[in-house]
Length: 272
Image 1 (spheres, rainbow, N blue to C red):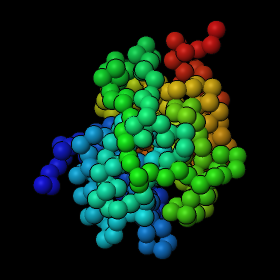
Image 2 (image 1 turned 120 degrees about the vertical axis):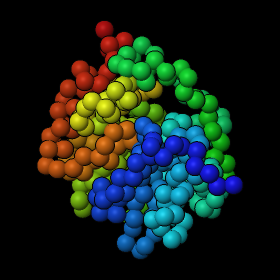
Image 3 (image 1 turned 90 degrees about the vertical axis):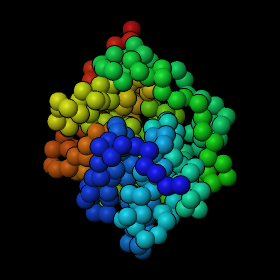
Image 4 (image 1 turned 60 degrees about the vertical axis):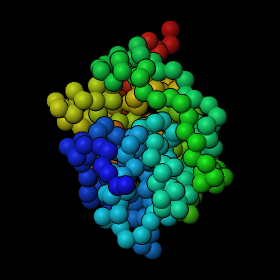
């Protein structure tokens, strides 16, 4: 039976982020749809537990067809939890980087959170977040082989899929050079993820590092942000926080990259 599991006041559509790119905020995480010239579309990420109905109704209100695929930025619970249900409903393939497969096939769970990351309630609550792997099953497929961490995926024409590890081993981002649009998952955020609820009430969007309580390798995370800054994006669509657009986006990302250690890395993860 169809039902809405996420309260309506916790769901916010985000339209016209870029040409053919639309978003849906579900509580504290975003999913995106990307439309293509041939009329097909792709779903980027699959949200929180119990969000399948919310995502499906949003998508089916906008589109007359099922997505050509679901592509995951990484395997954390807030980005993948509805993936199997949505894929089964739509008969869709689910793509992810091979390094995320242990967490998407029921094999392994992510490392424990860094509760000492500090910064707000999300860090304190992090031990309660699901870490156990989900099993997407036979619909899961790896990204095609690429060179230098760049993949051309046939279901994402006009976009480059970039391996941006650090937050997780197989984290990926998406870049469209024609309008410098960047979909970043959790490579970085436009809100302080450790205090998301406080930030949502009190702050304008600003660039922050990846969610500190679940970031796997800070050296790789820093390198990935530098790589993304080199793209000079004009539009950024993050997994957490509001999309940003304008001439100042690239400069703000370069500042984050240059000051990553001070801005992003929690004190208890600094190298001594």
